Image (cartoon, helix red, strand yellow):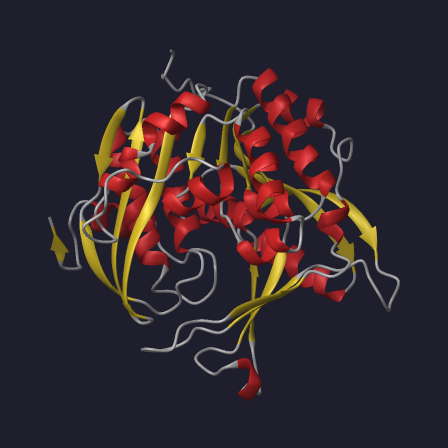
Length: 360
């Protein structure tokens, strides 16, 4: 079994994402039932990774997605430009009443013993209408793409989005790009999209094409139907349960080169212990752990993934790549919004044991 990850050295784009762009309404620590104002954050797991890689890590990135011609679309497109991400849009016209729409996600931050509450309005979402044939993959990949990334939230939106992901992954493979996927299992979304059995079926077909998988034990169990760990974890930061599942993951998906995830022990909404682990080419890697004072937890997982991808794309050692992901994900929780405000210098300093107290 070949477990080596062969990353193209050049390309017009370092990373191309395929997924849905959304706008997240954030009333801060105030619950929505009492909110009088909201901040608007542009988000979407694949875009978050592309934006982080461009803005913090200086990489050339793109996003293939749906865009609607109306003011919310203009707001979102402006943020895509400001983060330095090249868009490949399938355009839709809004009818002024019903859509199609750019999805809205509602998420307060919670505080202390009160956890965040997240709910969605993805009715008549433009991204859910995306289907195979909507993007000219030959032209996009023909210019050179080193890495292709998508995720499970986009896969859940409709029958056609899952097929589009597979089409994109097949095109990426044909042009020599690395393929990654974030399982990002969301029970609310899959419950509205055919339930748990359909999730396992759809995600299993997608992951057959994947080199690098991001997902924790719950994602692997609920999203892929992988039998749970035989070893009980001593804490949320204990990687033994995650590593115990790797043999079963690779037995089912022999194409897999890397599986990685974050580890998080939630003391309160505002205080977390944070770590990361990865299985890379048959070897295990574990980050340091640290205590986080969390300002906004949304996007921390995408922050980890983008730092990990940067490390691998830039030729860092596996251990350094995991540390870069861990450090960037930690820093991202200190900013408002879903995308990075960190500098590469801050990420490197934290990865090497800088400013925050680290327990080794």
